[in-house]
Image 1 (tube, helix red, strand yellow):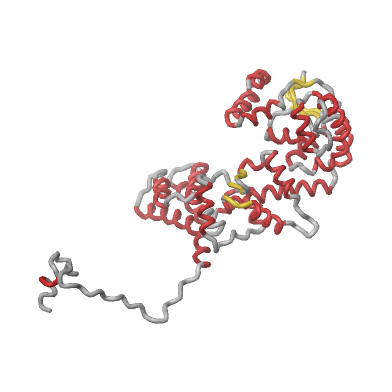
Image 2: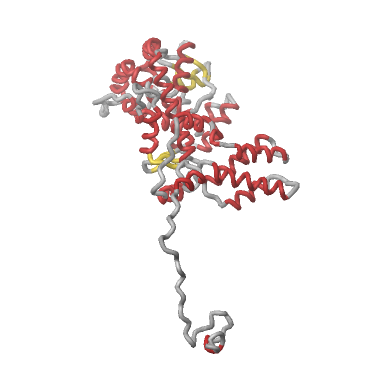
Length: 404
């Protein structure tokens, strides 16, 4: 960490951004970040860029690009093998990108393959590009933090990087990633098989089939799934407070299938979680806005309310928190606020009900049939020495039973 900080002392803003990132990231992520800030000469040869890397990083490239029979090579031989292999694998490597990676490469190619870098993108996107030998990052003397494409790679990229088929593939990769995030906005937690089955129905045509293994790999490696994480064969929305509780809640509803979601719904929810809002969310936000909250705080308050309800927090507690945000002038306003929260709870998709609204679940549950014969409550005979049923505390024979 000290090496990273020393390298960025010349640029205070970059140093602060790195520092904030390191506070939040794991040791593994910090190590991956260090790979992007080491000193680098102005040498665009592929061999030089590979020689800068450690054996671990070279093996990562070997595995990502599927270079066979090279696991036992020493570093020098592995560098030579990769230098010959990588230019032949450009089409396959490019298919593993999302739109952010493609944008970076196109920008680099238009700037003679070398550009200063200002950390506009997620660090993991750069790691992903380096893992496939497409671009390499470091501290370049006279330029600062820079990203480069080796000459041997640039020659091949010029012929394939602007290919229409590649662009369509990357667009579908991006769409699939966005739809996965959207599905989790509906479900909260879901087995991978459910997500995969849904994605299969989202394919825009019979000739388009998602390479789901690649989609998940791209999402995890580039940090696209910052908003969800894998757990025991399931994808989990990071807003889920207790994934075990939520999973048990879903499992208890054995007769309820996961909601079938359209491609448009998944894209809308993946682009903006407020795509799941309805008129009751907006009504509550307007009420809070009228009572003095700023627009940002009002929207955030409704987000928090929705988040708490989806996590199963008690309705009364949620209402109390909302009422505590503003000063209401009358009982009518307090009742209106409670009605908005109740309507949000009843008409919004919930995680416990697998993406259905509580109202939809009630409609699906069949009513029990009336019995064929009227139900008669059996009368129990009271003994003489039993307590009197009238509640006097006396024995039956000395109270209501005295006259019998």
